[in-house]
Image (cartoon, rainbow over all chains, first blue to last red):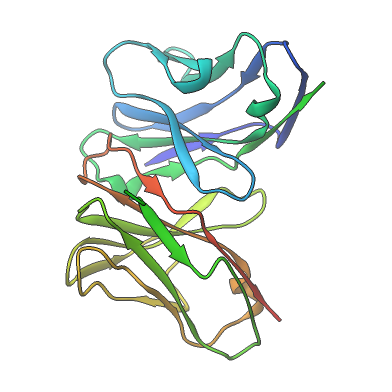
Length: 115
Length: 114
């Protein structure tokens, strides 16, 4: 079985500051890891995903995440926050050999960017 | 290419009423999903479908029904609305069923049951 932990529900940063959103996972099989973003009043869209190739994954809008097996983590970062990054971010995990219907989402993290 | 579309965007229901949430995708994806999103709880899978005529339960199916008569459409039915079904409902689709596949989401339907 898989699970995801996103500690806290809200993070606030200043424009231009580093964005760091934490995600820790639990999986009994090799995991696939995803970050989805939800802008206000919209559906979720994929930011990036880890599928067992490179451990450092680059996504859209300058975001990246690093898979660290030893720490069971897949934290999302962006060097310099922009006002347009204000959204809710969901980490999700699925397991090798499972189906797409087994995707498990974290509770989400709302990012506020202050001018 | 509209992707995944959902109607209505917002609906208020009285307890005991029924309604159908519509979902259509134009990407020719065989796999489709219904999720509900509650504040601070992430997304929970209600039902999914692997193709026309084939559906299966997800994590939270009670109080809902689905059908899949075409590849494009995957409606979600609420028969006897209850306040616990107040939520935001998202439909999604994917081109394959592999665990590493990306899911494509619609804009959501916000439902309030009073």
